[in-house]
Image (cartoon, rainbow, N blue to C red; front, side):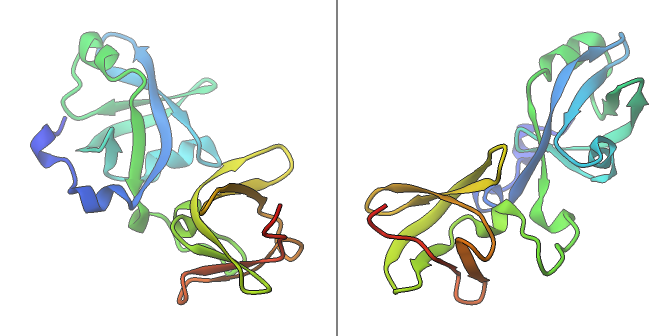
Length: 174
C-alpha cells in the first residue's frame, strides 16, 4: 500500500470521483470485499490506480465472487491488513473516467458552476448533487441554500462549461 507521503496534492482532491468503498476482509490472505457505485459494479475494477482515502493504491487483482466483488491491493497481505481498510472510500482521478456523451455530465464537472436564472438572477454555485428516486438534485449555495431538481429542459436549460454557468428556469424567491 502507498504511504501517506504519496497522497495527492490538495489541488488534486477536488478532481477525485468516489466510485465505492472497501468492505470487510475476504479470507485470510488480504483480499477485501468491494462495494461499487459503478454500473455495472465490476467496472470499478478497470480503474488503476485507486485512491483509497486519498492515497494512491495499486489494485493487484480483482473479480466477481458470487454476488460480491473482491480485490487484492498492494501491501495488503493478511486479514489484519484487510480489516484495517474496512470502510475506506475508493476514488479515481476525474481524468481516468471516459468522456461523457454530449447529453451526459459527471457530477464533479457541475460542482462549482454558477447557477443563473433565465432572467439573469444569480442563485449561487453548485455545492454538490444528490440522487433521489425521481431525479438528481443540485445543491446551490448562495445567499441561501437552494435545492433544484436536475430536470433537463424543464428546469435546467443549459450547461455552459466555457462560461462555468448553468442556466435554469427557476423562481429566485423559491
